[in-house]
Image: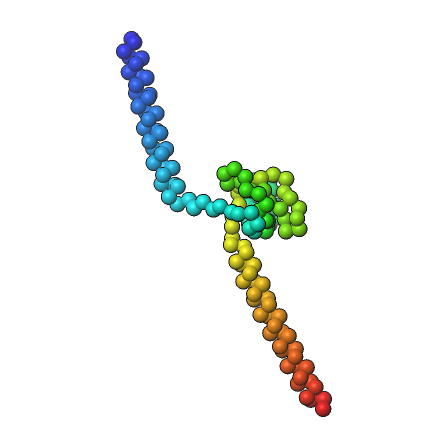
Length: 137
């Protein structure tokens, strides 16, 4: 009877070790594809909108998945961050569900494009004014 109990315990122990090996194998395969992103204080980031109860029912699947931009004001242990809006309003808890969409680079590109458009408009306005003056004389 006692040998039978020891035998069952050994089988269970062996099964648990096999499960742990399988979990480690799956974790290793998963972690190959995961790219950790670490953010620094002052970076602009987007925050995920969790789907349960926080998305707008008005747009259903077309509602946005991200909200922001937010500024990282403090890095907390691990991969958690304290955020604030661009107006300086701090969010009341730490977040770790963040996506960096290289917002600062996109913003810089957009500002550069806007500056180019503004310069073009000024140049066109000047040329139109010159033509108008020339025609009026």
